Image (cartoon, rainbow, N blue to C red; front, side, top):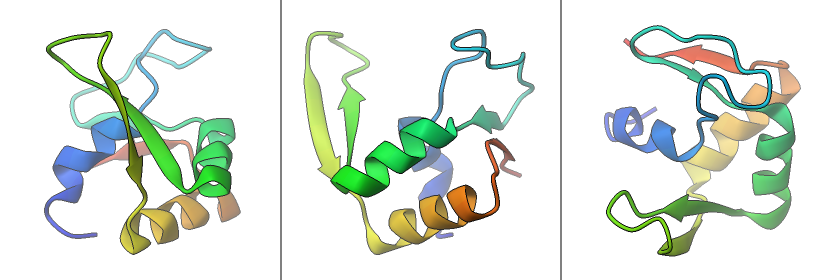
Length: 83
């Protein structure tokens, strides 16, 4: 994945403590399989502005993001650590 992925992965994460997500360490992320399947089906991810929770946008998946999500689903991976 390109370097910008370190910033983009937060678009895909499920916050710790939500929907059975375990506590996570620094640079660890949980990406729910059902969310990954939805994003792949719709080819978009919905993001919320950090400045205004009412402001939401849809972003098209890049080819790299799509390939990564497909790999995550195919390998049943939900827990990711980025170094």
